[in-house]
Image 1 (cartoon, rainbow over the protein chains, first blue to last red):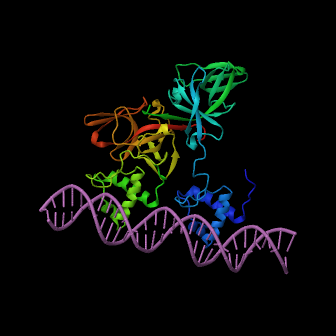
Image 2 (image 1 turned 45 degrees about the vertical axis):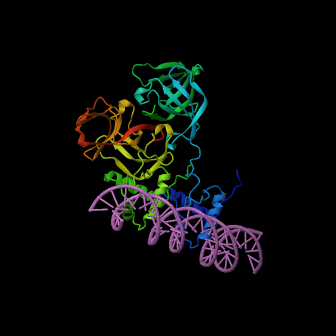
Image 3 (image 1 turned 90 degrees about the vertical axis):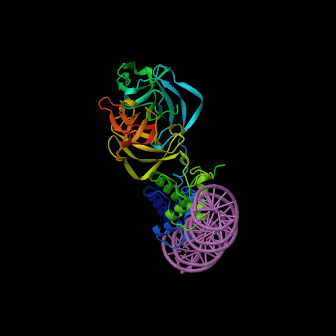
Length: 206
Length: 206
DNA sequence: CCTAAAAGAGAACTGATAGAGAACAGGAGG
DNA sequence: CCTCCTGTTCTCTATCAGTTCTCTTTTAGG
């Protein structure tokens, strides 16, 4: 976005310290604490460096109310908002929602890639602890490793959530429900739409 | 309407004290008692902090009749950040974490009340789709309806996640694992610490 | 050697937080 | 009635943290 604001020696030093401090302590350091840690006696001088880092977008500008020097990354959750796209049931098209609601997802439940949410209908994955009504977080991907749980599109119409087993020329989809059988298709007939990376369930608030 | 919901250092300190006091004593503390506990000499100053906490919705506004500083029933956590408090395994104390990490939870996974997160160890609830390593969101509550899944504290030591069945004078805890049996205790021996309201699982990033 | 950028020291200012203490109101109880 | 307890409101300071400023020292490059 902006020009390459290369950091000076001291700026880099301060930024590194903040990164380290961030992982070790709950509260961001104050200017005075920074002075002591970095080894300088003047708040004023240090503040000049802080300003440079703020302009570089690495540090959150002070807000009056909140104290401490805090990195931009952890303060306002950037956007972990991912869309709730619809419902998925074994053997029917994904029931899309016209106006996707965004949900704020904790970091650990999503992957690096582009994700979306589907709500599960049916019990085909019940033995893996995926129940009717659960939300699943899907990473948009067209390939998967064997054994992963994928959203598979069959004949361009039916979408289903299953374990995948890819063999030469064919793809086998395994449910996690001993009352159901596996399904076998020519590779050309199945398209991987995404891979399961997270799951959520709400109790009682229906 | 809403102020910045971030508490100041002192406000947090006072709120923490009240939470702790709440679990140890029957009656809420008076302003003077609070002064002594927190370590300040002025009721007036302390009252300013109390007002801030009232505005944040964490403390009940005074009602004339009732004396004492009392917490709001089911006070909401400020924003949607709720703390990851530790691990829960059937039949051992909750393994607390010294520095609770906050997780940003989607609205649907939590309840109105004060919540926290535990990570499940073991397979005692596997048939309800609660697997080893899952995160569960617990609402702080001391009562439950029969059939709900609760965090139950047995003899003040062992914590466990089970279905609860309350009968006159006794409490039965049911696992969701057909290889395990139910456990039966006198009511006095079991304390409900919270009720399961949500659940999360991460695939593959482990 | 000279110059400009980077870094440091220190003083002064601003606003938010915090504490002390005085004064007031309203109920409980002797 | 008066007095204690408790919550409330108020003013006056003190302290802390971030900001801004000026002046000097160090460092790097031509």
